[in-house]
Image (cartoon, rainbow, N blue to C red):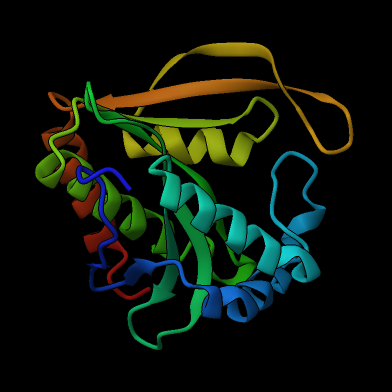
Length: 200
């Protein structure tokens, strides 16, 4: 892995993002079963029986220096509630994407996503020195688009017919980003959102 991007545990009051391990596959399969997330046609979450292979694929990308995958755990119970990554890594600029993120149904709208993004963005901008952090999602994933906009990211554009989905359909990908100049205001916004929902 490139020296610029090394495995790290990011700890907050709501969530802990720890480096993905093979041993996490079973717990991740259980989290994906919470809401049967693999049935959502506009996103890509592995079925339980495919989770171990997905973990291996992410670890291979980690070893190649193109991805840093995390397991998302609740800070209060340690329960695994999802996964996320740094991906599309560009150490030269530097910039990266936060992507391949999914959250168990019962943990959605509980502050988990906001807390995770605060930790990931903070590490990207304040520690890694990123000039921009990108987010991408399916045009039809309105829930994800709304959540990304709520973070304070701005839409850069749409990549039409960008990727073929497992079912053969073509995906239009919406690209968003936050720049280093925008980060202080975004950080304050996310902290305020978490403070308002401190009971979650």
